[in-house]
Length: 339
Image (tube, rainbow, N blue to C red; front, side):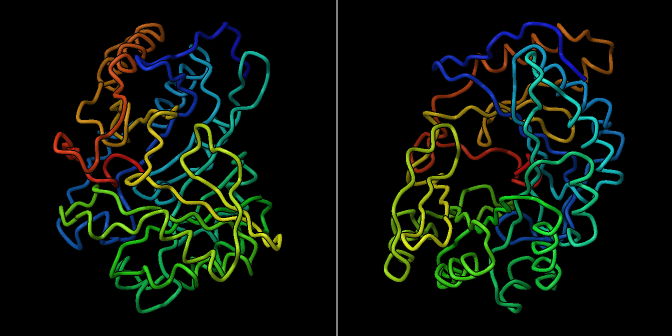
């Protein structure tokens, strides 16, 4: 599908051009990670409240055609629990920029079923994949996710590589007192299997409101821990990418750190978000949402929906203010917003 109009850059009040759209396809998940969900009591959206695949494709097409968005990432909840996901991927993979370039299409998954679907996702047109993995210890993995799925996740990562995803990136949220003693183990494992482990600072988006600054393991501490055993050198500046990256001096790959708390990348942020129920958000930590589903289902034109998106981006903050007195937690947890 080639977009024939000439796009206009989507620029926020701070001069940042939006290029990246994160789309949550469901709020449901087959894990119950402690930093994301309570063990029980989550109230799921009714399926009629979710955007259909056709509606998601339409908004994505507007983002690409009107504004030149060139990167789309599918998230959840857990995106693979939504039925017929390859159908959506096929539709999004067909999107083209005005010059004919394919839109970069990625997916973040917990990996529990990846061993069964990696090849199908790749064949549908998915370009890149990130897998969440916070522990290599079965008992601890069970404690964090409340699911006994570690073996399946590890098998899924191998299958993703076999399917042709390169690189495969593995995201690990590091929480002090929970898994910070596994930083080196995760780095060593990533070196051995040939995946880039990306360590993520613990953020205040847990459903049970237990986040506190003392539980954050900083980027500096993570890098120092690894560098003492496997010497590192920093890769040039990340630009709009969320992760700072280092390469092993012996050539055995790379690591990344997403320092959302201690060194936020807000100044270079180029991303916006669409929730599974059709709310447009300009930041993971935004307190305001802009409804696209309602107007779309009432018959709004593409230009009218583009106008809502443009107006919303006009309110984008300079930064999220974590750790400052003015910080306000979003009313939704990570699984409800889209990771």
